[in-house]
Image (cartoon, rainbow, N blue to C red; front, side):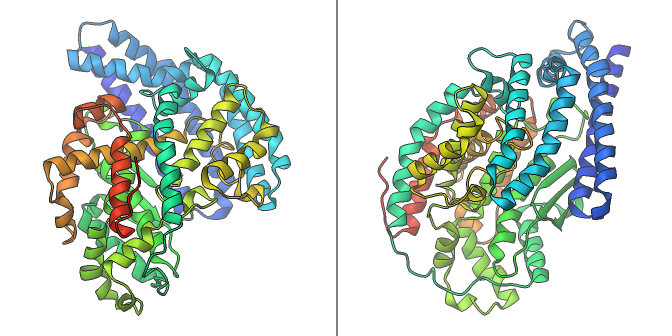
Length: 501
């Protein structure tokens, strides 16, 4: 029994140390003085080094010892196997490579900021070349079956291979392109009204009211403002989110709030104990993103949600623009489908073509099929092919995202996977409770939140993404639910326009 208590205590310690790092990162983004950056970087670097040492020298050996023992229940042994699968990659990467990658990404991020400001890819290219080289070394250390990119993708999503991703995107790509073409040419009434202005203080008050109504427990969370909205969950009783406010357009604050609330509701729905074990951890980045995409798009962009806002929320703030709109025209305004050069400013249809091109390009870089020097031209060609847009400069093209400067190759696909899972979950909710959107028009989001709690949140990391999807919806991930969701929304908002499948 001593081994059982030892492992539980070590998993608890690892989870607590991770929470400290998460808390310091939240503080850095929200309220740390600017002059404290260098010291905070040193603190975080030291703590991450200690955490990695604790993981490789104590926790992983203890998990292996536990796996060979007879002191654990069948459920605990399964959890131990899940944790080993999660942690063992850290052991495979040599410490000098970890350090080299960390240093290269730190330097690259600083140069990326300057390169983006100057739209100068040549300034950034040598740093990206080094990161790609180190990423390939990381892939070799981790091991793979078919291609190097597979090893990096598994760091973010273990249950789907690059080939399966290619198939999913291949199925949805023609539909996305045709939807954009048809919607872009369609004129819509009611979009030329005044901007949705509201003071920053009123926007914060509005966001807090709406998030409380949707189910976010502010006794176990808080809402702050940051340049880049994010969610930080230290444990289910302390889950914080930030929003971004533009005084001239409240949809920025509201959209970021609904997105981050999805992450926060997931974190608040995880089990509290035993700390560090799979039920207290999220399933994957893809499932985490499914939660944010569900609440941002299937709830926050729905006509029924804007009926609730129009009737019960906006009148309290007496905005001058309210009489210029109806719930339908406001919903059209936030859902308008039109290609955009910038990923984070894109609608929920063209957004996935942005993710597709990034997946194809980073896969080519890691597999040695595309050189860094050829990257801008390849980027511009795909933007024109998929979105019909000309890229005026690299700041609005290949330099717009920080992910590659951070060395996060394999991360981008989780965004689209999250949307595909969200649509499949939404369809399952509608089968069980067909009137849930009608209730949403009254501000009642009880049904979807309870469904997520029952089918997704309570399991944490006990199942991988595909298994969780199969268990929750009765079938593996399919893009047909996403395409049907888009077709239904287009028909509703674009005056009966039908997009062929």
